[in-house]
Image 1 (cartoon, helix red, strand yellow):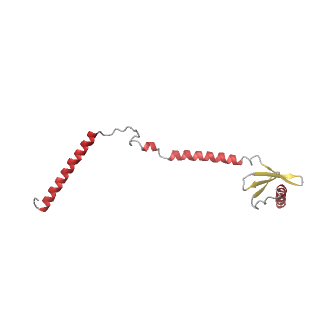
Image 2: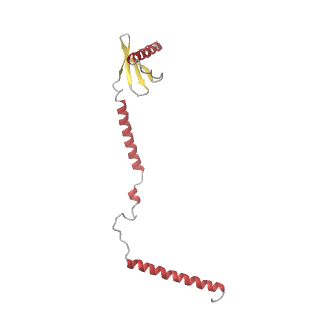
Image 3: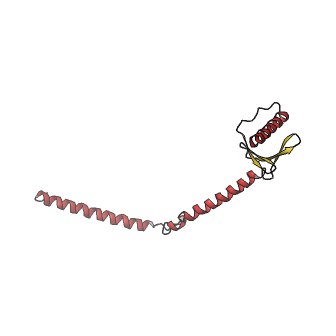
Length: 150
């Protein structure tokens, strides 16, 4: 009996589709899914996600979009937007605070306190003296290794 009802519903849906769009290509065989509910059948369009309630009307069935059929996409979008916001908040909570890791780093102040020419000259002079002393020490060590003076 149930199979007969499904067959009748499918025939009614197919007949209505042929009459309303005689020149259109028929939908794929697996596009619609029918579920028996109180008062008829619930038709799910697998391509669009829309649902319709198909109820007995006259000699066949008439399918009308369900109240939630048109708002299913809007509800899904709202649900997904909420989920995205939750995930973004979670990522933000789990991410290290970048400003905390920059504590002690060079500030981004464009007016940095750079050394004066005199300070640079003092450092250069110190490095020059240190280099001369190192070279003198290396020369003395080489003389001692050779066994005498050059």
